Image (cartoon, rainbow, N blue to C red; front, side, top):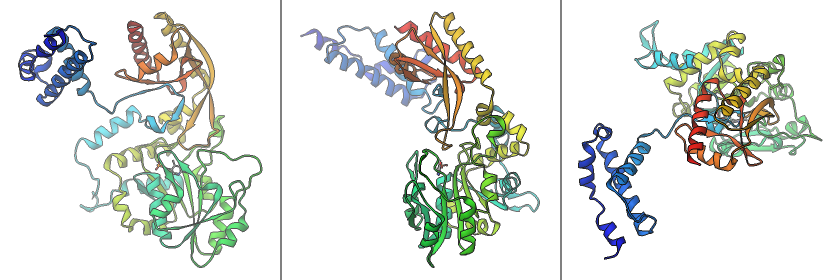
Amino acid sequence: MTNKQTLLRNLPKVDKVIDLLNEKEFFKDKPYKEVYDAVNEGINFFRKGILEEVITQYSIEDIENEITKSLTKNLEFNFKRVINGTGTILHTNLGRALFSKELIEHLQNSLCGYSNLEFDLKTGERGSRYSHVEDLIAKVTGAEAALVVNNNAAAVMLCLNEFSKNTEVIISRGELVEVGGSFRIPDIMELSSAKLVEVGTTNRTHLADYQKAINENTSMLLKVHTSNYHISGFTKSVSNKEIAELAKEHRIISMEDLGSGVLIDFSKYGQKKEPTIFESLNSGIDLITFSGDKLLGGPQCGVIIGKRELISKLKKNQFLRAFRVCKMTISALEFTFKQYVDEKVAIEKNPTLNRILEPISEVFKRAEILKNLLKDIEIDSEIIETKAIIGGGSMPDATIDSYGVAITSLDGKQVETAFLKEDTPIVGRVQNNQFFIDLKTIHSDEYSIIIKNFKKFLERV
Ligand SMILES: *Cc1c(COP(=O)(O)O)cnc(C)c1O
């Protein structure tokens, strides 16, 4: 018999290994199904290795170690914290807006027990889940009324279905956007049974283009914030005010999909200006929709604000039941908007606004701290000026001056690959084959995790 056959034959049986491991402290309290799977994976690992002749000897301890590794991996959560070293503040792939510790504390208080989600404490009768945030959103934004659904895509869909089912919606060709996660205005139109009428050209649309397209079948003029690209040069678009007036003249609805809902005039704080919710409302637009987890800095949801009469109609649409938000969203959104009652509080406490508006000197300090911590473990790095990106459907050219740390003494690609596999992965950039971490999106409680990952990397190479 060849050595290969002997090795295969001597591989222990699954049941035997389970009996053996059940005696051990680490395996005792683990779910049987997980242990069973891990044992199978462990033994299969060796079977495959022997067949491919990469394993030519093993001990029972080797097998046990492999099983322990498998079990540890299988018991981990899939959804977990990731360190964002990319410098993109609202990163759709990394979870967009962050929750503050205070918000989590509030959620703990409001969600661990029963709640008045749909219970009116004044009358003791059935209430509406939307009532918890409706007046607050109206107060903060200055709108007549408000409604909340699962995300902004649902908000747009609900409005189109309610007001433009089987009728025509006019939109500029320059605003037929696709945003991340395959939100395409033409597709949403089709799903909502609204008929899309495109006017103008990609770079230029005039008021007369809208005027000419209006007929007795038209129900809405729609503006969409071109949130992820920017057309420059020979361009012309029609202002909200002109759109609102034209719609009024023809007794049809004007609506704007703002994408990212901004309540703070960033230019007051030395950053580039984003169109605000107030400006959109003041222009006379009837309905505005925006995301909860972009620049607002709250939970994932879609907020619809505007004329009371229109919002009341939306509340009766059957799609609302399918788009309804959960209690966690209601609670988190109320918390988020309450901070906006005083702009100063929002800027101080909301993690998204915090990051956007903090002075650059703070970012530089963090870069220096990280560089020094790296030096302590004998890793060389350089502080580099960079541009952080706001992201999440804000203006595509909205960048913020920032600082990053480039690792000069390690292979960038190797670091990148290794860091994705860590317990707390770090997502950075690789430029000139150097791993690069932008400090804009790093929090001061994350240094220890970063350093731990680098230490582990050094041990391996
Ligand atoms: C982001 C965005 C959406 C989609 O919002 P979600 O909350 O992700 O559904 C729609 N329209 C515009 C203009 C956007 O920027």
